[in-house]
Image (cartoon, rainbow, N blue to C red; front, side):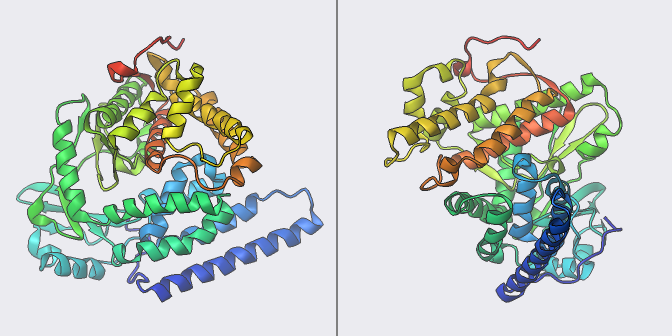
Length: 446
């Protein structure tokens, strides 16, 4: 991280942060003017340079603001069907490579949170961050011979969430082709989750509960121990986990056996949380996983946890049962319970949205129809992205009177597609473990 330019301050006040958004909006507007001026002389020109310029300007701004503004970019980088490639590549950097805070700001945070500087608490403490993401950054420390990771929250993160999300709306509606109704629905759930992520006391409690519940349950996984005595409202201290991120791990050309082993552990990790704990690590991006040469994997950052209500669980997972899509009466019952339909829908509208959601569920549930599924099959993902592109352009969807689908589905769907994307990058073939009640007629992938 030391080669990244450090920040000595973060804009904290609403006026400072709003000014940053306004200036970024002006640069984006200028990019559009340049694009259309050139296009007047070259009608066949595509928008790839416009996307690159916008992605650069928006990422630069969000990475300086940090907090919820940058977190939204991180989330959108995972939803690859929402973003042009230029945005995907740039916003992915927010997962573990944002510009870090300078050391004096780190010391100030420690003194406010724990009453002491890091040097007075730990035997050693790196002055440069070893990792910096959207909500906080990580330093390496030692204490009594133990190597530790110390996560520090950026100043102003919790206080700026609501105002940041209001400021990011114009970018989302224009760049990501979302209606205001969809955005309202999306942002209310996102705001709640971001508020939880900014609560380090809550994260510490959940991290301990979930890792203790998972201990020894799944082969090939390891978790850090968390240290309450060195943690507080804006600092969390845990064991340092060795390993590398997914991109670096894949660059070592691991064997197919190793990739399958990791893929199976990933699948079983999420299967256990969804069906046994009913709460799930809902931030499955590569920055939260550490990979070892022997096929073991460490999991960190339990700040974003989605708790799953029983009624949503029953209705949602019923959609994934083999044979579900052939039962019209069951489709209507479950879709209504999950708020896919509106009371004022005409018969024609209900038919359209029933078709749209049936197709979406068919894509999401496809791996559940098999004993073994090959996530390295790129055709499956191309179908998903093509469907997302096509549905986003349907006038019936864009003109729908309000968002559709339970708010609980936002993070659950995001978790599954994030999991699917990681398994695709691993090129992993996975045994599809699931609860007995989800079993049915299945076939094996050839």
